[in-house]
Image (cartoon, rainbow, N blue to C red; front, top):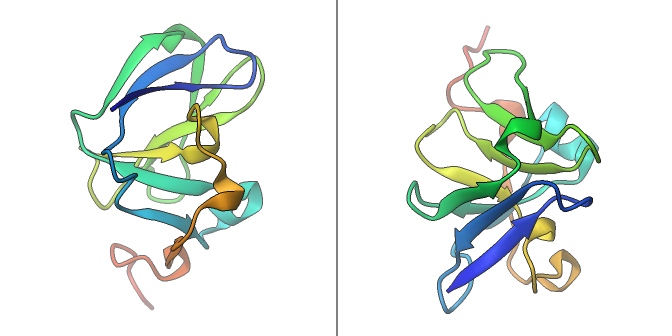
Length: 123
């Protein structure tokens, strides 16, 4: 089913396709960025996310390997989505930005171990 994903001010909007039984993979990540923002990530396929408006106001944040792309609204500052470095074709969405989803009521939220990412070189 198609749902609307927006930032706080509404200047950015995307259409996301959510399966009838909900987002299959929902998780928190313990990497330095995600744990600071309390990000609950919903993983969507490469064809399940479409920007409707406000692409021009998005800002990109990258750090460390600069492979992952984290997007946020330049007006209200809300992090809306990302392209993960493990698979840059898919989308991680901020489930709190999706209409009708209350992240505090989600069950079975997993953990992504971003502190020990498989693409990091261990010393």
